[in-house]
Length: 189
Image (tube, rainbow, N blue to C red):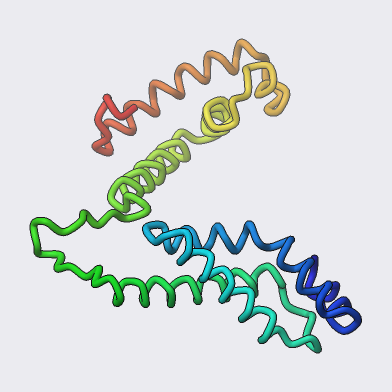
């Protein structure tokens, strides 16, 4: 259901509009609320879901249907879920010091160090591939990034498949040398 469909239905049959919106977005709202309130009880999650839909029903301006309905509902769901989490944390006293040895381990969603190292490795790899020159860089990219065979690459570059294979082998050896010169250990290759 889009924002304009909801607005039109809201003007004509508000109860039906609310019911259709609830049925269509319940799973989405529940997922957002559950992700924020994972350690809370199911009653707390359901209360949060009710508050989210109440906020959406009360605050949706039926004159403005130009916005993204799912985006609006998602924003409301995240905001109210965070508020519920804060209330529950205060109520249950779920605070701790990060210096305390018995504190729960804080875990990032992404491993920033590994992501950064991988990004740097990809950048170095692409620099070395570009340094091979043409057509070797195109052959390496087509073969290893796009998983194309010698015949497909040959058609693309107007070369014989046997010539593509030979250039590919030589280019891979040169690439390996370039990477070792740049400090990339052989075991990472």
